[in-house]
Image (cartoon, rainbow, N blue to C red; front, side):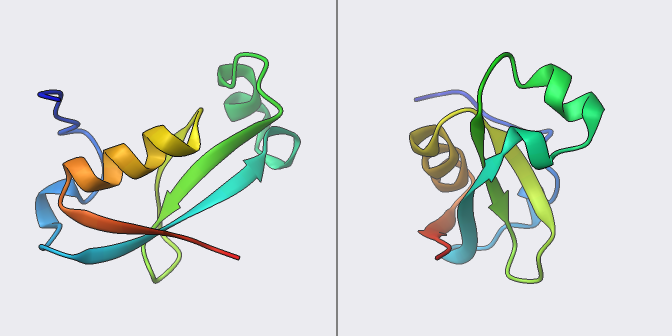
Length: 79
């Protein structure tokens, strides 16, 4: 996989093994402008730093994990 996500906030500051958290998010809980971009999904997945800062919203959990790993982060599920 050669795709880089340079526009991912904080990606250039990621350190090897930095933990990020992945959690499902109901599209209905998002602001209206984000709901419009969700393209018919009921649930999407958020990637967050340990301090709660949201780094990304993506359509699938596999994509959330792949995106985090692409930026040398260690993704884990939030319960």
